[in-house]
Length: 423
Image (cartoon, rainbow, N blue to C red):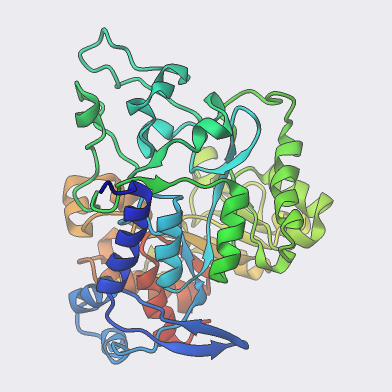
């Protein structure tokens, strides 16, 4: 008999997370029963990689759990270290690993339906669209006359309708731009990830993600992605786009306290604060000033605009920069909070940060100067190996005081948070 690829992937995902389990628990937290939280082997490996310290001893003593679902652990696109991002299978894996909050990055299709994708124009690397008849509809379709026909291909959710979107399979976000065949192009996954669970990842609309997250009993952090098409698009304005996302939570009966709406666009955040104040109260400003402001320096407040105090005065309550912006190495070679982190807290801003476990082995990344060092660029002088991921996490939790952290393998953060009593 034939095998349904989506069913096979769902079964594989469940078996994989279960088989990799090192410990599980059942408990009541805030009156809610939390069952069978499984962190997998990854955090145990990282603890063993740590240099001897009080922190390592404390984490080793937690090896038998129990482990709990925690809002400190945020599933970044699900659990994309091993599962195709923004798929049902990835989200289910993240929830099983104790992530108390899951992320759907929100963009829209040609017929203005909201879907979960990290970028409006990432279908060529995150799905099998170039291996289907929809390839010809892409913003930049493959060039069959070129020896590398997929090198310039760009496929956007806005190129296709929702019905067409539903026919696609999710895969690991990767590509081989130098490939001469579609088979080679689809095999670009980094060697520190895996294609074992990429049979046919189940893509989701934003509404479907809300339904799934309700079933999984988690909170929700949608990110309104920047459009890659001129707005208005087919009659949809930027403000209408921001409102449409919130309306889908209201229509589903999700209480505002369970939703952390995010955007890199400060105007989106201010729109929610002004027009949907109950949701705006937990809106998250994803701070990309490190990228947009010339001369930005986490140790120099004069290079930040607006200031932390100005953001607070505009109604912003939560700010979310990448990890490196919050940390520095002091004269004693220790990782400590940056001036940015201190000023944000002094201004009364809460902090969420990103992204743990979104890289290969740190030592190899440092030697080769690869992209994985981005998240640790301000603390590389204090990092000696993969175990220092947990040291970084400890400083963020105890000294910076972040509310939570995005991770591509939420089990690592869940292990730490459960051990340290963070809920």
